[in-house]
Image (cartoon, rainbow, N blue to C red):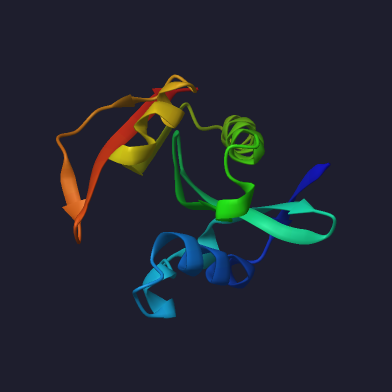
Length: 135
């Protein structure tokens, strides 16, 4: 059973780093306004297995640094976290949710009604696009 709960930004850093940018320094995965966000962890048997961070600015919300341990991917954990974040963004008054998504994960986001709303851009060698949806 997976349990989702709020966590501090600091508790997201190791998982963000190991999954998203393992070849960069740890500080690379920190976000300047992490202290303004809402951070959630997915726990299985007390162990942190996935993280996501939500930032709300009026009617617009953005999630960032969405990461699941590789051995826990494709098991519905990300779906639980993203559904939780969508509900939380709505509860906080947001009407739009967006993210910068790696193109390799585009199909996952499309399953949640998100669509690419930008041209492809790169962060290092990795292609991304901005994905968005109305809540």
